[in-house]
Length: 158
Image 1: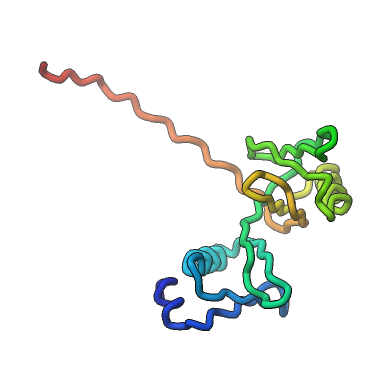
Image 2: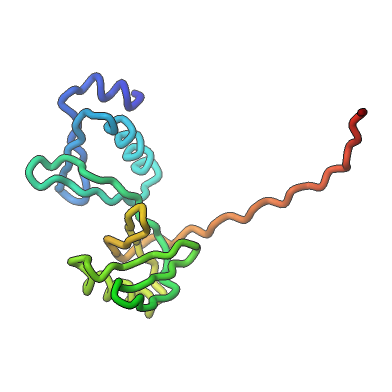
């Protein structure tokens, strides 16, 4: 059933099973159908998802998709935290010193770099790292751009 129809059919929302026996709630709203579609697509792909929930209602507050990657380099950025280069990414990723989990996240990044281990890195839209976990999956290599066949130039009448 399409997500918008499911939202209409179940006006009380959905209970979403997450890691182990934990659950989150998806309540009807402007973004509910989109979130439901994303969650279903990720479930079918068996891909990871990062969900933040409201502690009182267990409602989904934020949904992000982790990047499965390797840590290429970590460099201190004075005052702000660490700039982290991730394999197959051209973005500048920041582990902000203000993050309450900064020491643990930095340790996880350094450990992964030392072992050349795959990790799941979750970040905000501004590329600020908010979660790092070991990954049993290997990073997917970005595809190459297929070569464009050269076509003979055609002349058009004036």
